[in-house]
Length: 372
Image 1 (cartoon, rainbow, N blue to C red):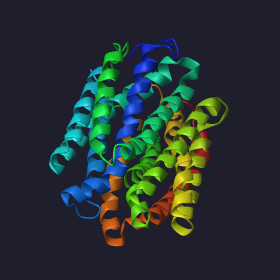
Image 2 (image 1 turned 180 degrees about the vertical axis):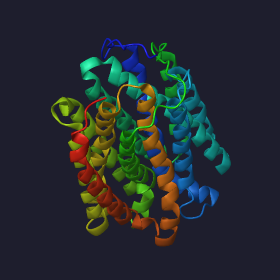
Image 3 (image 1 turned 60 degrees about the vertical axis):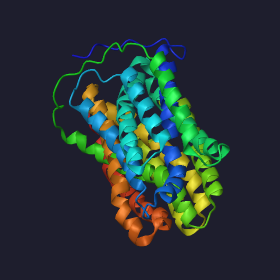
């Protein structure tokens, strides 16, 4: 049995300090991948689209860790996870070979998966009535790291190594700030199956779009004719919109139905991607960050209410998203290989339109379901 959570002390608590720092540094990694992949591709002579394998392995590691949480594996906590992220970031910083980069991305992803489960669950539970807002807030802090990553990359002359060493140091600091977790225990074994679990397909789809924009957006902009420095600045602007939307959501989330916020996020993302494909890559790509940014925290709160308080189901929500982040780049790889990375925005716009239509069709029925 999971112990009844006690609300935390607030913004001065060790939970907030360690969780916020961990999410900040985790935001650095995928954004850095986006701007560093063209450099790594040139350095290691990779074929077009092959760099997406690193993004997929990072998300695969996270998905493996989260699936362990779904199965009720004990001992998945913030302190050892931060240590694993530190080791993975250090391996990426060494950059000695493409195989080392791939292995280190997988390792960092494992740590990310555990941190994502623990921090989202604990913020939702331990902050009491402020929990939904705090989930949006800490996910906004994740985006602050993502904003800074491309700018730091440019500041050190387009080299990923120094930024990754700093990330490893921040992970070690997060480990030092972490405190023992009061309710890590979960019922062993998989959670019971329920038709309600089909809702996880929605976040699977939204994270496919998010992961593709974060990991491949810079490459698509470069293939569309922008210089690498210009693409890096646009990636930072994308994450600025991403963070602003999440922080704004934290202020108003108690007033807005999370299911409608999620649907609105999908609709806005699709419209922006159409703009990027048909009008201007820059002007469509940047505001898409605001809309895709609110999708996950809104879905996490909404689906947590629909599925119930079992921590294994909280891990399942994250698992669905992380599997989407893993399979999305892999599925896009042959498509982009055939049509070129410049086709990313129109491909995602078609997928986004289909996903928005499905969510909109099922939403009235889901709103009538009683809470478990």
